[in-house]
Length: 141
Image (tube, rainbow, N blue to C red; front, top):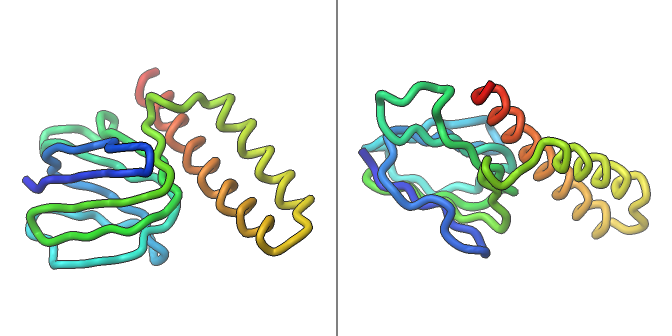
């Protein structure tokens, strides 16, 4: 087992032992287990999934929408820092769909590169929140 800490500007979202953590990176999702090689890496926006124990089935994993961030692994501990993290219990599918539509509108109406960049960041995070909400619904039905 390794220790996993998931931290945002709003506080700690996860701070406990974990058997496996799936982390989105620019090159794709990677699985981090105990004794993973030391690594510091930028993480992409998407869904972080946590398997607290080896016996936990995929349907029982915990999921978090992240807006990207930085991760550090030393083999015994994984720390993931992100500006914005949403736990599955904090997201509503209809609200996530509405946020995604708003982000798409912002992209269409952006009048500067800064606005366009921010709109794309919101789009990616809204898409991740929607994925987390759908995972929650699928596993609870």
